[in-house]
Structure formats: structure tokens, C-alpha cells
Image (cartoon, helix red, strand yellow):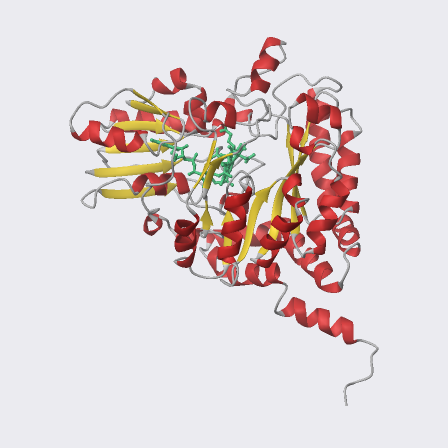
Length: 470
Ligand code: B12
């Protein structure tokens, strides 16, 4: 059987928000996992529209498409196209789970929730000629998943092909998060076995790893045992965690010792009323300055995530948040406009209050305001969001931030990492177009590790003014 798996892209390349490097980071792991359930006789292709033009002249028997909220219309367009060509079309992923009726108009079968149990069930039904129109996940386990079909990923098109997901979900339940609806009807958080994860890591080339888990630190025992296993493997890794994990000395020390170099943290807001309203209790009362200090003291860079537009935000929130992040020496920041994703408690509340301004899913990309904010206009929110980005990433801010670092090596690493990520868009664009993006991986590893030219410059700086060794 010919099987085609597609990760469609969110918007047309003309969009002012299209950053080639952002979309050339990670391969579609969900699809590579689902491909692992197919038989050896099947001919399988995975295409990711973020990094390649789709081949639409093929005639697959079975098409599996992943839908995020922002790619929904493109997903439906592709699904209709392949159904018209006679293929059997399956749709799954986050948006399908939250809008099953909408998705089922374009699919032969839809899949709600994680598909580790439902996809193999469907494959059996399909082989027997009686597939169901809808599969709803209820069993949740990663114990018997097949190895990811990394051989189907065109790894030279990604900066970080060594990305992994070793858990699903998160034990917390914040109002704005997709998790609530996606994991409904089963366990909301579960992990792989550590031994399996370490085996998978062992087979990955290079040094760099990126864990895409929502919260790698959520199960303390699992995390400690993973970090213990990673120690001595010579890896450099990045992941996402919470402020509470950063305040857990043992966890953080172990993570740093095993190669943690940069952590994505959902600070979300500097305002406690906002945290309470969104039920993000795990951040309440935490000293954010202390979180930053602890990570920086251990040489861990920070990607701080903030959400603008919660009900306690006023128009001053943009400047004060960006200013805090710069003054703290935070390396990269991701700002978002609060987005009531369908299926979330936030969406329900906004709908009940009559505050949803549009159901155009293209705009649910955290860069547009799709609801009526409480203390400002939608325009003020969008303008302020862009201003926060401009302020945070202007060269003077980057230098100011680098200056608060305790030593020259960290300051140089800050300049290289932040500048490299945001200030050379045209170079990234060129590297991606010419297929050379994967060649920059060794450079990324050096920046993360603080070795090579960075260490030499640091030593030169440290030795300046001292008598030459005799
Ligand atoms: C990596 C990532 C990206 C990467 C690339 C995505 C990729 N290569 O897969 C990049 C950087 C490009 C990206 C971009 C964006 N992302 Co993103 N991303 C993620 C992240 C962190 C991990 C995805 C992942 O690998 N998950 C692990 C795999 C195993 O799970 P999975 O993909 O969901 O697949 C499982 C099931 O969904 C199901 N399944 C999925 N598809 C299908 C299809 C079929 C047929 C079947 C049977 C089953 C099935 O089976 C899999 C196994 O259970 C998630 C958060 C998360 N934890 O999922 C956010 C997330 C998916 N992103 C999100 C968003 C908002 C965006 C952006 C809009 C951000 C932006 N402003 O640009 C864009 C939109 C991209 C688009 N195409 O529309 C949201 C989506 C919200 C929503 N309701 O749709 C998430 C959930 C983050 C969040 N917490 O809000 N993203």
C-alpha cells in the first residue's frame, strides 16, 4: 500500500510572520511515530510543507494528515484534493480533536487525541475493509510504541533533527493550554521508559538534542533517572520546563551536569492575578528573578515565554515585561498574544462572555488578537506585542542583556546565540534555500557548549593585562 503522511504549513510563504528558520527547526515526530506502525511492505512518504514543496502528482492509497489550529484550512484543502483522487484520507492531531465535526467533513476517518492505540486499531480495521469514521483515544501508554521512522525524515532540511518527545502532556491544567481537550478521556500525562529513551538517544548522531516535551521535568523521578542516564554521554540538550523545576536544586543540578544548555520556561506573566485567573498556580508566588539566577549560575540559557492580553494586563505590560527580561539577561524571549484555542477552558469562558471576535483559524497563531481584551483595544494588544519583540531584540538591548552576565564567556555566548537566532534572518533564509541549514549544526553545538572561538575570545579577554607567561 502507498501511504502519504503530511504536515501542512500554517500560512502562505508571503505571510509577514513566516520566519524560515523557525519552521525549519523540528521534523514531524508525530507522523514519524505513526509511520512506525505500518508494515514493511508499505511504501511510506512523509512530507513537511514547512520545509518542502508538496508533491501533489502522486496517487497514494492512504493519506494521513496532521492538523494544528493554524493549518486547518490548508489541511482541509489537501484532504479534499486527495479524496477527489480516490485516496482514503485520515485526519488527526490537535485541531481535529477540538473540532471533530468540522474535520470530519473532509476526512474518511478522524482521530481524536493521541493515536498510539487508535492508529494501529484503524490499520487493522482498514486492512479488514471496515474502518470506522471516528477513533477516540482512551488507552494511554508509550510502553509498546514502535521506534520512530527517522529514516523517513529529510534530516538535512532541519536545524534540529535530533528532536525527541519522551512524554505526553503535563500534570498541570492551565486554562489557555491545548492539553485539557486533547487528553480528555484518559491519562493527561505519561512518560516513556527511561531505558528506551537512552537507547534512542544513543543512536542519534552529533551531540545536540532537543526535547519537545511540554514539561520534561514534570515527573521528578523520571527526570532524575533520565538525567542520571544522560550524564557521561557527552550530550548538549535543550528542553522546556517550569519555574518550579528551576527552583528544585537536585533536579537542576542533575540536568545541568547531564548537558542542559538552554531551557524554555513559561513565565507567561509577571502579574499574579493573571496567573490565578488562568489557573497557572504552579507559577504563583515564585520569585522569577531567583529562577533566572539559578539557571544562569549553572550556565543554562533561558528562552522565556510570555503571554500578553490576560485580563489584568494594562497597556504598560509590553514595555515592563520586555524591560524585565532584558534586565535579567534572558537570552531569548517568545512573546505571544493570548489565544483562546478551541477546546480550552479559556475559549469557553471567552465565548460565554461574548468576547470572541473571529473564528478564522488562520488568525489563531498567537500573533493576532482574536478576542476582545479587557483593558485595551485589540489594536493596542497587537501593536504592543510587536513592540515588545522589537524592544527585546534590538542590538542595544542584546548588548545590555549580555552585560549582566557574570563572565565574558556567558556574555559572548549570549551575543552569539541571541544575535544568531534573530538578527541574521536573510542568512538563515539563504542557508535554508540552498539546503545548507544542516551544516550549521556544529556551530550551534559550539555556541551552546561555549567552546571554539567563544572560549578562545574569553581566554584572550581574561589574560589581557596579565604578564605573559614565562
Ligand atoms: C515542534 C512543534 C512545532 C514545530 C514543528 C511541528 C512539527 N514538526 O511537528 C514548529 C516550530 C514548526 C511549530 C509551529 C507552530 N506551532 Co507548534 N508545536 C510543536 C510542539 C512543541 C511539539 C510537536 C510534537 O512533536 N509533538 C509530539 C508528537 C508525538 O505529537 P503530535 O504531533 O501531537 O502527534 C500525535 C497526535 O496528535 C496524533 N496525530 C497527529 N497528527 C495525526 C494525523 C493522523 C492521521 C493521526 C491518525 C494521528 C495524528 O498522533 C501522534 C501520536 O499520538 C507542540 C507541543 C506538543 N507537545 O505537541 C507545539 C504546538 C503543536 N504548536 C502550536 C502552535 C500554536 C504553533 C504555531 C501556530 C506557532 C506559531 N505562532 O507559529 C505554529 C503553527 C504550525 C502550523 N503548521 O500550523 C500549538 C498548537 C495549538 C493547536 N491547538 O493547534 C502547540 C500545541 C503548542 C502549544 N502548547 O500551544 N510547532
